Image (tube, rainbow, N blue to C red):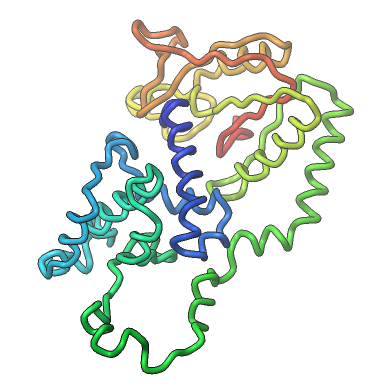
Length: 310
């Protein structure tokens, strides 16, 4: 789990990259932002984030990818933990080009000249230079024959993607949103809302759309991450707690917090990061640790994969 500032910076970076990448590969326009972010997560530098990526100047990169050694050192089937992963040099190059694109150090024209972005693999490849300036000059600077570039259509084709599902379910989704809005109007606020489902089920997307609807209705929205109430992972292992039932959480504090915010009160909840809670097993704040303050709101979303399990 990363803190709010780091997540904000990460989201801002991905948004800026998303806007610019469609000029590198037009197929990016066929992706929803959240799909783009899912793919980008596989390249995120866990130690230091995007700001830790060191950028070489353009000439250095050009010289590097013009050398046979660059390609000779690439491992075709690099493995990590028994799985085939993206090769280190390709990861490093892709990160550099992405960060350089967002920061403006590398221009779109230069990147397109030297590199090709494989959208399905989500990495940059060195563009093959079939004809040098010398060769083009020798043949008068014009091609012998030209063809309509029909293959460019493949750049836009991603098979059956999220947008297809979104279009198919547009009426159902809107009906669900209307139903929730009507429910809130009847029940009144503050109100706690939560959606249960496994990873990639669409919880984030529907919460985002509901949030937009509530904000347009001049209602204040906040969210609580259920994972923040988890006990230390080491403590759970020591006690033999293998499930995410109430024994895995600061459960009494969780109930108190829900009761407080539903009565319009500001609440202070634990902060869970890297398998460690800010609170001890008695739900008291550990010395030197920090908790999370959540202001009262009309709509409170409870985020988590299994919010109804307890």
